Image (cartoon, rainbow, N blue to C red; front, side):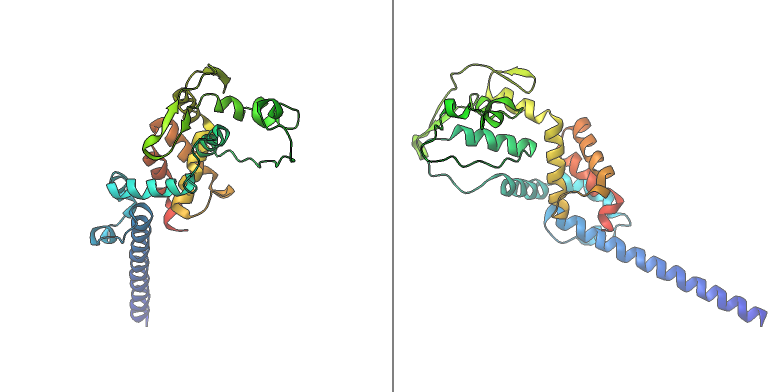
Length: 243
């Protein structure tokens, strides 16, 4: 009876070990499929499916043209609205889009009453000057740094701004290049881009319990300054393959 009992226990342990190995293989395959679809938009190949740790393949996938194309399409869909048919640019709209696309700024536009002064003088009134002149995102001041587009198609021309340097973001900015460079060097840009990374990988923004992974994404942008490093910080976290 003792011998039989030992054999029975040993057989049970062997079955559990095989079950664990089978579960691990299935988990790896699911991880491989998720990574391939998320980063390159295609099915996982045989090598990735057989990889004992599919997340080790992430760096190579992030260096591929397929990832570059997929992420560019995603960002393009996030940033751009429909095509404009206007012959001239609304520079305030352009300023807001730049701020929204780089820092994630969200504003609700107020609708003026008929006959209200909507010139710079009118926008400097107490009801409007906060967004247009006083806040860090002062739209009118940002717009002063943008070239103005005139015409359409092959007849498009751009006129350089004429209102001189502006005091914005705690410094003196003289050109639209200065403006973009300063925005992209801000924490607001890094937070906004990591928010986009979560949307790219998960189809949603980050949540509170993912603060540690979000911080790792931000740190990657600080140290390596590439979107690939930010995506890697999230996709390589063990949680990416189990959620």
